[in-house]
Image (cartoon, rainbow, N blue to C red):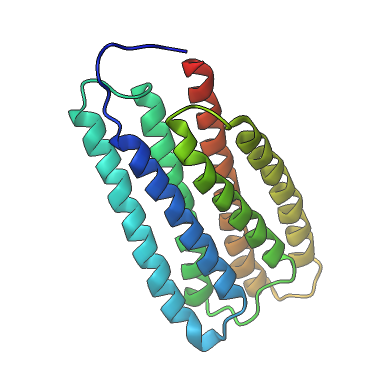
Length: 206
């Protein structure tokens, strides 16, 4: 364990926790989108956009604090990487919801609910893990499980693509739906990036 006689700025922990909790909000909005009428989707988009803006505010606060702190709780590049990856996840979630409305997609493909459920579970795990950065404890199971979920997301994504290319949809609809499922896959990848960054931080601080 690394020791320091110099006080370190600890507000980063609170900001990372807030960013992760916001991902839970985003994942719940994705789940809500699945069961919503088409007429209700615009309102979900607005709430997702508000969550994305809140995420941006937190990310900017992290960067501002990083630039004004002489001593940080762990390496600056890791703080930047963690904040950026958390922000990326929220951006991908917001993009997916926005695309569904912009493309006027009436029916989402079978299997996309599994993709979103994986993201919701990853969001819950990430929100549970962020407070543990203070003590660097109870994190190993988190990054192992998120990596497992990302592998599961890859399999779901491949099956969704196979379904889209089965001939059931016309070409334009395939393009629209593929872009949505691809963005959700990027969100799953970004969750793995967060977990990998947490693992890197924990190893350095051990």
